[in-house]
Image (tube, one colour):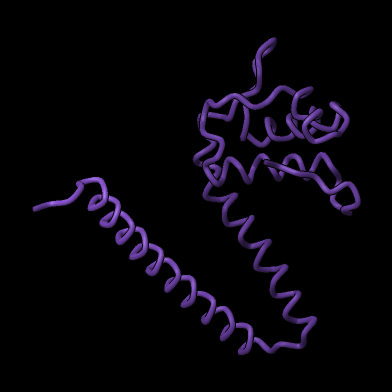
Length: 150
């Protein structure tokens, strides 16, 4: 569920816009999927409907959503083409924030690279371990469903 931070320096309409882009990028929202009405999303986020309307207008201008007169807005059919570029932008923003934070701790480029390398190796190990755990779980579930043999 998307959230907005009313005390952020990022304008609320921009937070709404980024939240919807993120959901499209992550595949939570798929092409041609209807978006919540402006009023419904405004009520959910506890913001002014004009704020959501502005975010929707900008998303439409950027090609992420389509709006037809008298109907709900939907995720644009060509949004998948925009997703790759948007994914790079989002991840780039996250990396920039992480690098800025590392610099506040006076980490050198070499230390940042080393830390990132360790994190990458750790996430690969976590993924491998999760896959093995899931496979083991599947085997034990199939044994328990099969009952006793003999």
